[in-house]
Length: 277
Image (cartoon, rainbow, N blue to C red):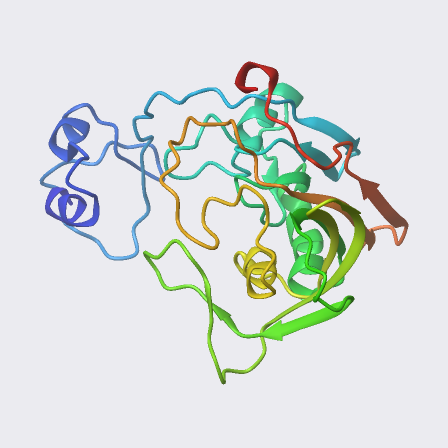
């Protein structure tokens, strides 16, 4: 088992010390031994060491809470789920403690730098019913974004193409000639000088879909660190929030059949937290 763990885990993990400290355990809670025979299909559990994380400014507004779901309005720069270097500084980890809901989990994706509405399930038993709504596209999602105004851009327009994202690359890209897998309705909502607020209605949910689609129209979202070019922004720089807001969620509740609609408490343009202003 020790040989297998060294092979499976990154070099930065001190497997030998963790084995000596009995930090790897089986389902039964029994410690894994370095010389234990390797057994296929065996679950091994451990808690990894967490690096210090810079506190993300901004408040998680609880928009709605009942026995099955919690809908929150998250600030930019806060990860939805614990991932990579963002564990304690994630919506799920923060709210599990604050709301006393140890099984709380995100029901869909929202990029770390995107602000707005995120829906979570209170218990494991509710996940399937609500996650299937997002997977089947029955949740009506509306976003708003601040981007340059173009006099020659005819709106509304529906952008339809194939988006792909290679593992290890920061940016997603349009794949010419491939079957359509991404569709967004783009509408002009208001204009202020050389910038405008656009209403975005995605009919699919590909990675970075809205950001790529607006970039393709020649109106990249203001303060986007990835499009049109990748910028080297420190992870603790919260001074320029992406001007993209997940502003509305609407759906028919799969459990009780009620019609639900939620709106973000935030408005565009998004401003940095006072301590980063």
